[in-house]
Length: 83
Image (cartoon, rainbow, N blue to C red):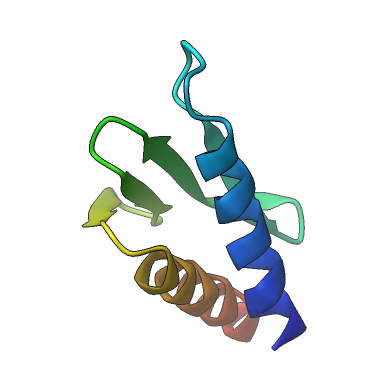
């Protein structure tokens, strides 16, 4: 549960960076390997989660912080299970 809370806190930090010129973004890693990147678009209030797979990239849009956090958590857990 603490890992999910940590993800939510990182997403909330991105939201608090509204008004800056750059789009806030964060990378999530497992064992030093970047597994996804998240961007926050303050104009629309949406998160874009870009999952890096071995063969291609998947991109998901979320307008809810909880849904975005759960998706990131699932991606991290999936990668940990494969490691």
